[in-house]
Each structure stands twice: as structure tokens, then as C-alpha cells.
Length: 290
Image 1: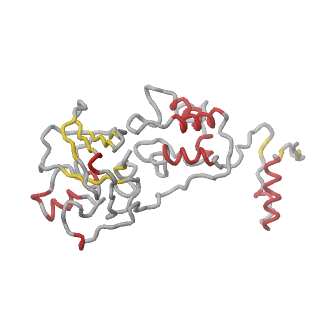
Image 2: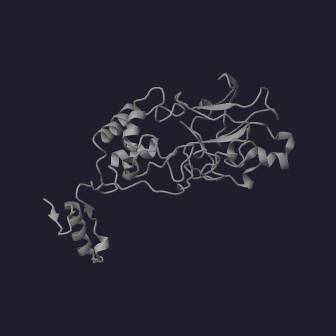
Image 3: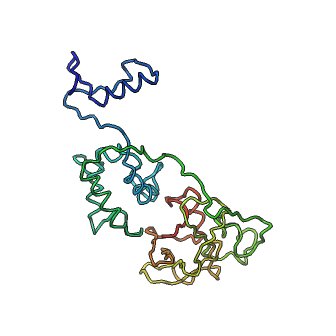
């Protein structure tokens, strides 16, 4: 089913199809446009994910395995070719094979223990695709570069809305207060959003804010402070300095009891300095409901 070239090189059936498409579209027929592989070399095929696999990766992987990578993730996982590459940890295995092992590794799981558990249906789908050798699909790759900024509520705070506890969601509250109003520059301040890349000033409009908890943990994982956001998503402590030794970790508990836990100890309580629209200092983005 393959046409052999006199030089000992061969063109796969996929390549002939691509050339026919190119001719129909009026593309250049220069030899450089053809995908030619040496005999014995496997053509990796289209760099396109199956639609259902792409949806799982977008929801469970791409927030950290992005371009650029976030939260200390070692590489992007946005395209089929990202999974096909050789692992830098185990070069004899592909990134996809390593991913499969991590999905089944209770001691070092992926997604990490800091994230909500992956639903079994999604885990089974991703596992089946990886075990099958990562076959190509028809939904392309996830976009690289900065994620689109959104506002799920469609409502933005403005100065006309007032300067109370619901002001300026998403902005670095304490940094501003230290300059403009030091007497209310509380140590822990931030905003909880429903999605990861909400715009500055977007009102979170949480449906059940009283059921959301931001728990501040000490280094022994003891809850030292529990903060509840308001409807705009803003939360704040009531003291200018912490009442226990730094550093700390935070755990966000959603209305249904699922949680997301910070993995890296912090000493800065101005949460939105890292949890920006695109994420800074290795944060993947906003403080997002689990």
C-alpha cells in the first residue's frame, strides 16, 4: 500500500492524501511540502487529538501543562505530539507512557494530590487512549500561549460600585491597602473565582459563597484560619499580621466538599499577587473553585 521512491525513501498513504488535498486547494507542489520518511522510520501522523481526549486534557491537564508551563509542570501537554515525545526522565519511554504510569501511581499521582480527583470516566477515557498508542483524532491541539481572559458573570466592579468588601475583585488587595489604607491592609486577602482566567475587576458572583471556605494551614497541616468569601469572591482576614508562624499553605473547599490544596508553602498573604489572570510565580491562574 506504499509507493517506493528510487532513493529508497517512501511516502505513506497519509502523505498521498495530503498531497491530493494540497492539489485541490492550489498549494505549492514543491518537494519540501511532502512528508517523506526514511524506510523503517515511523511517521508520527497528524498532530490532532480525539475530541473527547482533548476535552479531558483541557479540563484536567492544560492549566499547568501549558505554554509556558505553570505550577512547576515540566512540559506542555497540549498536542498529540507532546505525548509522543521521548520522556526526559525515561528516554526509552514516551511522555504518554510516563503519563499512563502517573495516572496509576498512588504515591505520585497525576493529576497531583493538590487537585480534585479526576472522575473515573475521564480517567478511563484518557487511560484507554494512552494504552492504544495515542491514536490521532480530528479536534486538533489545544491553543498555546496565554489563555483567553473571561468574566463568567459578565459583570464588572467599578468605582461607582463603592469601596467596600466587594471592591476590585482579582486585584492585589493588600498591596493597594498598604499604600492607600494601611489600617485595613489585612494579611490574608484574595478572590475566589469560578474559572481559572477571570479578568481583573470581574465580579465572581459565587452562587453559594457561604459554602466556600479558604482554609489557612500551618506547616503541620492544621487549620489555623477559615475565611469565607463574599458574593464578589473576595475574602479577607481581620488582622494585619498572622497569628501563627509562617510559612503557610491554603486549601480551598467548594460547596460540594471537594477541595484544591496549595502545594508550595507561602509567606505572602496577598493571594492575588500570584493568582492573576494568567498566573504569576508558578500559579496557574486564579484561585479557582474545585
